[in-house]
Image 1 (cartoon, rainbow, N blue to C red):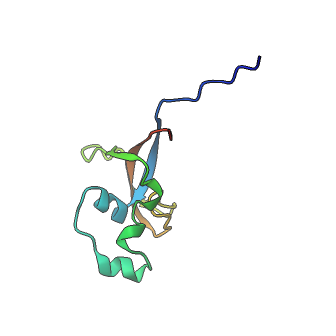
Image 2: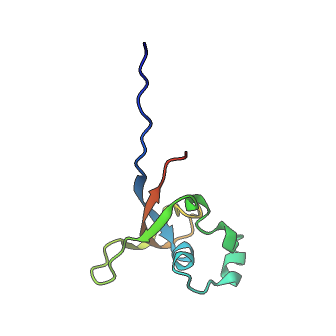
Length: 97
């Protein structure tokens, strides 16, 4: 008889790097809607690709850990390549039932 492995029930965790706009949305800071419109984005675009995760701040403003002052890397939250600061968020994604 074939025995199948038991599906993993543990949450999947990873670090995501997000742009300033996604970081502000995560912290419920006021957003610059005019600047978002200039970039052809809206508030619903922010953190769209991390919406199935529990997000936790993973930065240290005293040491600068988890803060990349200048990056042209893609934002893991909204997939923009707009240059600027990237912030590290700790993501916990629970397996689908």
